[in-house]
Length: 69
Image 1 (cartoon, rainbow, N blue to C red):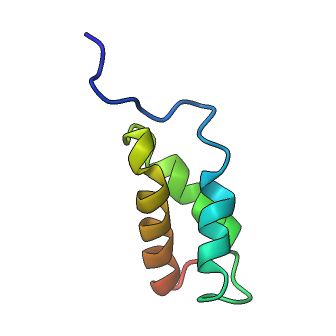
Image 2 (cartoon, rainbow, N blue to C red):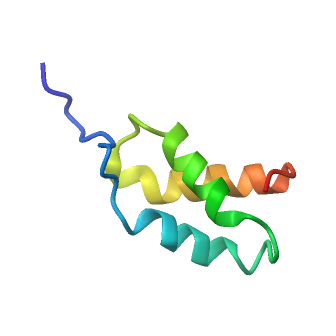
């Protein structure tokens, strides 16, 4: 059975990480934002591809607020 919604492939949309980093950088200067965003994207494997930009940014922001990075 084929899923009704596309899922994250090993070649995730290239724009997800840089776009999330660009939006989070002003809120968290001097933090390891790129690493946190990449981990968030990896942890969201299996999520619908169209939802990834929002989900990655939200998860990364929460992790940064919690002191990660």
